[in-house]
Length: 438
Image (cartoon, rainbow, N blue to C red; front, side, top):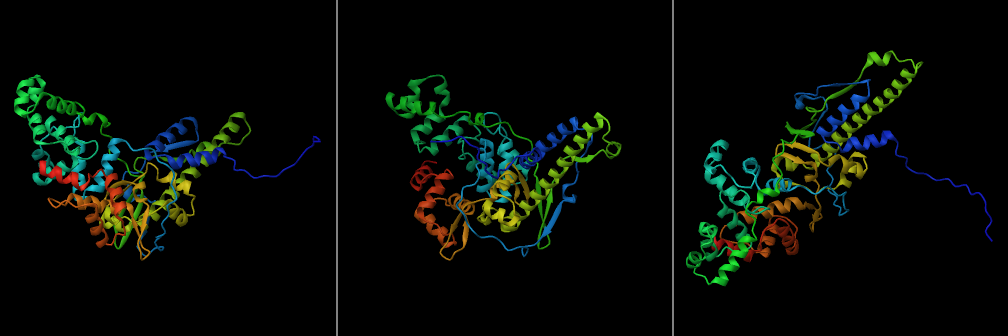
């Protein structure tokens, strides 16, 4: 029979104090979000004063210099899942495709083409005019545009409706001669002149109706899925070559400086109710300033560890990316993995290879027979380059695997096929048919 009684237990639990919640929130803020948050805080706290941020981020005092022989590089690979990040927008995905698919000297041209699109996803300016603005050969810029037309969503960067639809049909392996004739006579389609269309395409009525159904299933304005161009990204970190190593700087150009109103604080004695309220404000201000300093030191520590590990990327581009997980950075910085995840989320770094998200540097690893690790991002970048340069000699998955293995990548055919599909690259048989009909 159970008898009521008192039982005493001792346990430990993590209490989320307001100061801890504030510190965690600050880690996740971008520069613009943090600047807005500080302005709102200063509106309610009379002891805080905001001053304009730095105008020359490279000259800011929050910087570190280091060389490749600073702490040993981490090469440990891990398949532990990282914290999920919000899905990228269509525009973000396009920018990432450009970063991974083009060499550094062509990325700016591809991004310029992206910024030149109209609301429907067409390129209203001639390639020759854009080439003049970029000071590059028109044929080279046209080759970049042709590649961009087959990025997702397919049909962007076209100069006409016919070209937009043709790109979508080509990806589906449906751009046969009869379909090309139909695209060349869209004016007849607009006038619903079915008799002349059948004559032009040399098709029976049922076949023509099937082709028209395929045309109707295409997207004539793929640009409507893209958000309007966003303002230039303001990086949180800046890294520049410095002798044999690099110099890492915290960018505070848009971030206002926060300081105490020392005159008002010196007059507080806590005797009146107003003074007691201001003492609470003083405690909150102190906690905020400490949290800001902790954020700065943590961001610099994580950035330094990433740059040390990915020094080859800074020199040679995406093909030199090395495997890296948040656990690796946590071990180097003595920060928790969840803290690393919050720090790198929505943060950018300005590098010699362009401004890229910090999350780009994190990649799973493939381990070779000799124990070395290779970044999945680097392998995907090289795979994309091989396909882009294949010309009339279309490479099968087996051939791609052999080439990658000869270059030192430890990879199997099934992984090549998975990466190819993830990059939106058609099978070799489909690419052969596309080249015959193009």
